[in-house]
Image 1: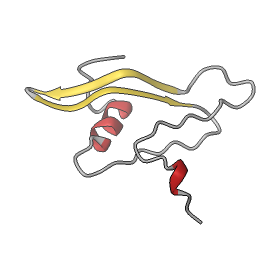
Image 2: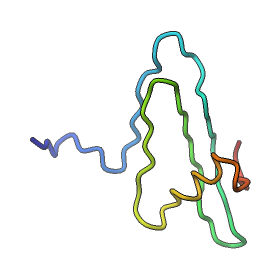
Image 3: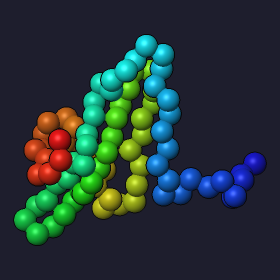
Length: 81
């Protein structure tokens, strides 16, 4: 059953870290990528912790592939850390 009163479309959801884990395995703060005048990503915050499932989801052209390429080291981010 779907409850439309508590929809999460566009929401940022955060799970609590598992016990004993105080730091993420991968973390991005305010990360972004620009290709000249084109901004592919802007202001991305991401924390991937052990024992949790993390999903990258979005419309075509939303920057999912660019984000994964930054995380993997294939592309260098142009803003953030």
